[in-house]
Image (cartoon, rainbow, N blue to C red; front, side, top):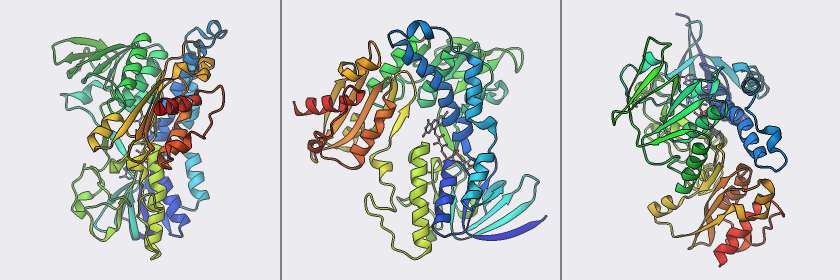
Length: 479
Ligand SMILES: Cc1cc2nc3c(=O)[nH]c(=O)nc-3n(C[C@H](O)[C@H](O)[C@H](O)COP(=O)(O)OP(=O)(O)OC[C@H]3O[C@@H](n4cnc5c(N)ncnc54)[C@H](O)[C@@H]3O)c2cc1C
């Protein structure tokens, strides 16, 4: 075995969006850094998650918007050009090639090692390269695990034999299935049901619970459910899948059996049933941790269970907020804190300080790209109740705002603002409606800056934009 050995200040395992940013930040902090990647630089997000899913959804949402604009309906009231949409998706993911990421990594002077990385005791990582050789990497200061998540599949018999779709197939398929069953009611499920329905598939959603996108305000799930039904999706709640078979071999129809004995068939079946950490084969057992577990971290991203503080876990794998932008924010903070500790500089881990990812607990923004869009940040009503925060709930029908009437005929949307009554600040905002995604950052700024509601009264929204909903929410709050 050709076992070479190299030493760096920092070793990063996983070059998804998060690992790339950790590496860039630690290098910028003056630390020699190597990043290990076993698949494509750019990770799940670039090739099988955020980027391709939004590329499939953008034409869907643009067409839905245009259908609501007087004078445009006749021009756009026809099916999407499927070939053009799929070609656009292929362009966005650069045909599953990572050359641009490699070039970027070179431009920021971070070393790349292709291969599968595994911890091998404290500060040691052994990489198995694509040609089967092994290279040992020693870290003087830190190892950052940024290995992300994969699909969490249900424990159903012979699932592998029936070629289930995961997020990978759902975002990379090169033809539209005639009938698609989507198992799950979370973000991936509603987005993919929206996209494939618009591309022409007959879609049935099988949702175990009684609502969609359960972590959001309930009205968001209800409005998305109504819209999916209007679009022709067969939405079934209380539907628990107990078995799936393919009749006539791997290419046959999928027959799905439900707990209540009901059955249905589909060409493809997508399991959008959650995410699992990619920690099963990264050598956790060599440092006394359990393979397959999430890596719980403190607020500076050190893995809590590891002594000496050399192991960091950033992004999806730490289970704090499974979103690219939030993981990249964590990466910026982790890079700064690894740099500070390596140089013996003080660490400022006070709330909102430079070395603490306070927004992870106070202000995580999220957009769900369905029609209507859902955009939310900060607390929901349920979370406020659970955490005992005293809030005033302020609701407003976005359709009553002049800007919304300009945006679309018969605009349907709803906004909710939660005001922390003890502090007089905005604690959470949810918008549901066409075009609200771009409104979200205003809410994120209000929540993170803890701007007094009385000062927001002086933040004047331009007329006639959907942003005027801010004014209406404040007026409603003041009574
Ligand atoms: C369908 C879908 C749509 C989504 N849409 C959005 C969205 O619109 N906006 C948003 O913010 N988030 C979205 N997400 C979530 C987003 O994809 C993740 O939060 C993000 O990819 C996490 O980044 P990461 O770097 O932590 O992990 P990943 O992107 O999973 O990257 C981890 C990298 O580590 C590598 N790796 C793993 N193990 C090893 C090993 N042992 N050795 C070497 N390399 C290894 C992997 O190959 C991979 O490249 C979506 C998710 C899904 C499934």
